[in-house]
Image (cartoon, rainbow, N blue to C red; front, side):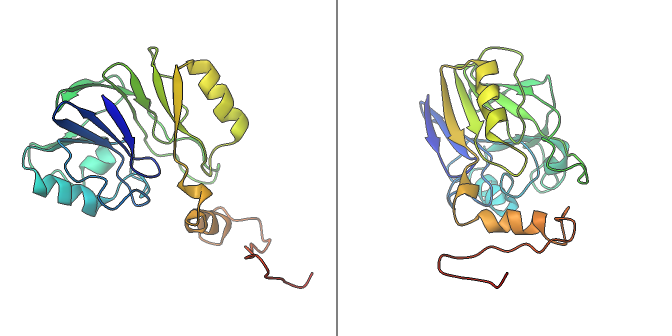
Length: 214
């Protein structure tokens, strides 16, 4: 297999003439889902689930199928009957020739004021694990861990301990778009009045050279 990073949390696996894509979301490359024979989505957050991209990939390839949790499947199943499959923790399936196992049930805690949503991870061909937005420890050893290195719900000490607990041969960074210019799309919402907020403190982000009175 060949693993290719397609931006943020999205990866592409190629094996022979078969292609599987996981989490082509809004921060991924625009063509991340194109050419997929199978699509997997870990949860409904838009940086992992971009409905137009999935629809385009499913329409372009009538043999392409999607495996995901109920909250995502319910938005696409009617348009693609028989091709959208709902899966959960403990399920196993074969997607375009790739063996898949589902591990995990809940998204990591972002803040106690926000309800937790469902999140699933996928072990692929017994060797690659994509946890989505959680530090799920799969119930089997894996060689390659796709590591969510930066998120509103994480801190680096937890990420380090996560790798140590799983003990993979390699950890490949994913979920790192928030270390670029797209970060304000998430942080401004969470720290502002539409999210948990800061408890009344004003939230500012200053560009280099910009100043405010204090």
